[in-house]
Amino acid sequence: MNTLTLNVKSEKVYTRCGVPISMVLPRLVSPSFSVSVSSRANMKIQGQNKEMLAAACQMFMGKLEGEIALETLEGHQRAIIAHLTVEEIYRDRKKFSAEVFKVSSSDLVNMGIGVVSYTLKDVHDDQDYLRSPGKSRTAQVQKDALIGEAQFKRDAVIREAHDKQEKISAQYVNEIQIAMAQRNYELKKAS
Image (cartoon, rainbow, N blue to C red; front, side):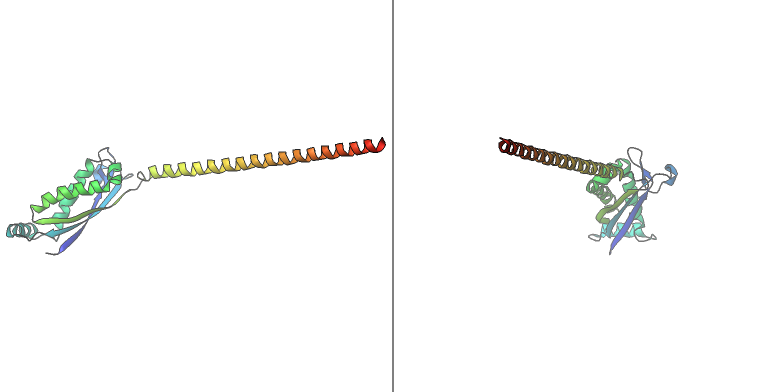
């Protein structure tokens, strides 16, 4: 009557768009690309009434603890993955978890087993398909940063050149004024 914790792992199963998600169907996919899905479910034998308890006893007779529940959860997880894209599974984990929970709960309750919780733990692939959008965004941010830095340096060089030009112009104006004052002085002195 204790709560059972089951780790549900699915390897190499195709999604709606034909992208293989890791579930237990290796003959269907190329080994060069796979996505792994793992989840955790907490189950409990329903002992609220005698019929449910009898159904659970009958289902578990001669089976390892949680074997039937695990197989049922894996089957429903595979079926739901087949109707979604990789992006839908990855981005909307709550929706995926809720679907698996809902479908599995209705099946398992007939067996006298209640699903206490179901959580999607991990979705990943060996070809970095799921990280590609993040990588392109990271590359874009790095590119923007480099462009920004280059523009800042360019603007700084332009400001520095402009300041230098103003300084030299001011020096020439001062030298011209000094020269004119010197000339006027020499003219007055000569007259």
